[in-house]
Image 1 (cartoon, protein in one colour):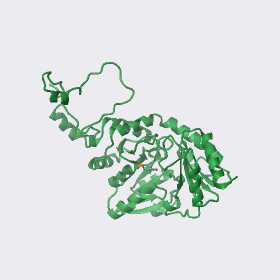
Image 2: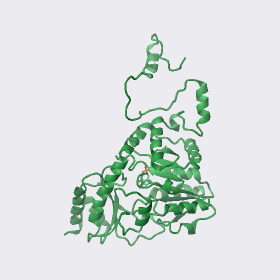
Image 3: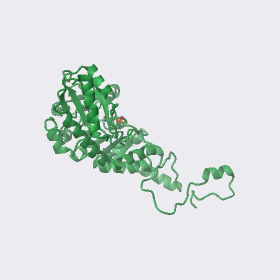
Image 4: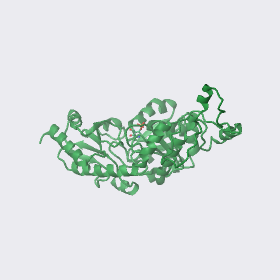
Length: 399
Ligand SMILES: Cc1ncc(COP(=O)(O)O)c(C=O)c1O
């Protein structure tokens, strides 16, 4: 007899409360979306089934305990693995947790890693507070990848890139860096948050591992944190084993929110891109603007690589003031009424921040650049956003 059989009617109240309702029979159709399966404990019909699941879970996806994933998260993993064109995906509570897990899984004290200069700034913090004290040797290389081969050594185990970077969108040659890494027995890891598996797919370009902050476009609504790691089949087991060893898991409610976001990801990105391009064309050539950073502009240094390797852009647009003090840049952002002042982009809403590019680079000197504002162009009407930007220019720099 199944362990889940309904208790006899004469059970006492406390037993009925504990056992009732778990096996409700649903007659009729089915919901569009997979259910949110909340679980720590997972039940099996027999000890044999439990032992079998325990035996197989090291190498197969098995629902055995909430800390090892849940069916809602598994559904999201499948969507992300498909987006990235990878073998499988694991989910992590934040994008940064996903990134740190990649280093923990694949490098060891004494190893050397090469990291692109344009990485998300907290990756540098992780390098300084954990990787270096742990004994890993780290060299930063130019964001466009041009000096990576000069720094690679026999001890290099990983080249880590963010392509494009997410402040001024430097593009590197992903296939060439994959080739360089593989010739030296190293892995190429890409932070693909900018591309979100839609505009860029590093695994299809030769990378071994792709990481995304699902917090951004995948979720798309600024209300949930998550990170994803997707790998090729060859390197999968190392990641999966380390994620299990560290108890990395996400809640099914968060997985549900991100899964819901992915349903509209492609449509939202098209709209973000389209709105952002209107703003780019308007900003480009303004007397108060020295440079607009956008890979879709033929003048952008990464334009040709972007055209070759990416399918489009997104809502991120940065620009450098022609002649402004840091205080004026702050005032410009403060004057905007439709843009939130915030850093975590990828939601439906527009954002603005003053970016500290000079302070987050060690290979290139950005100290002579004017203040740089990063905009995230959301789904609002682009003409309203342009009017808001025009009013802010007027407020700070006059007519
Ligand atoms: C490019 C990039 N990678 C990773 C992260 C980290 O993601 P999370 O904020 O979910 O930790 C961010 C967050 O801003 C990011 O912009």
